[in-house]
Length: 74
Image 1 (cartoon, rainbow, N blue to C red):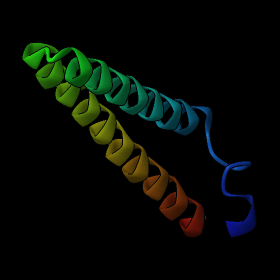
Image 2: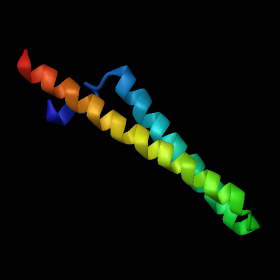
Image 3: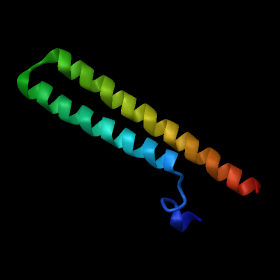
């Protein structure tokens, strides 16, 4: 089971992971643009987007952990 971690993951988990990675990537790009153009408001907004991505990542970890625990109980 551990060797096939991604193959055995549910679609919901994969969606959470890709959404989190996407938000973090968009936030980093926004941060780079904001800092090169010296736009303070956009820089703060980019931190919120990165934070949302990190929260989604943690939610994905919790969701996957619950799936694994349910699998052990069967």
